[in-house]
Image 1: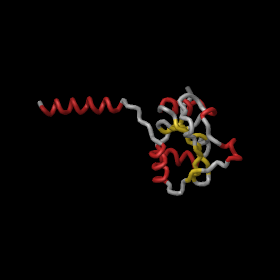
Image 2: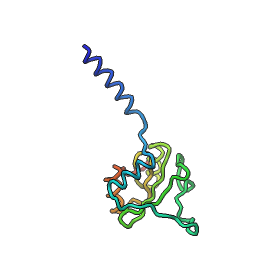
Image 3: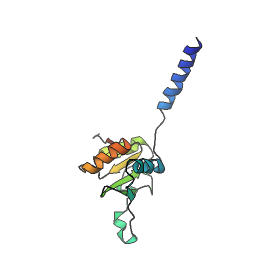
Length: 131
């Protein structure tokens, strides 16, 4: 009887945990990228190239200001930008026809085999589906 009660309690705890929104912090995302490919690097944007900055005004609701970065992956630039929730990132990925990993939009990935391979294998990313 104790085993049944324990399993019931364990199941209810696990079920409630599965409903929590899972997000990656910037450090977690970076660590995953580097663990998969130690040669990835952040792309610095000089002041005279302000047009290359990744800013929320280019993206939808839920974008976290200041989170956008360009990352060099196997000589190809990947744009990453953090959103408040996975749902926000997923909606924006669908709108743009791009990819997302939890609460991160992965932009300029579509039709770039090197980046598609990287985001799927490093982040378990998914392609946004048209709404």
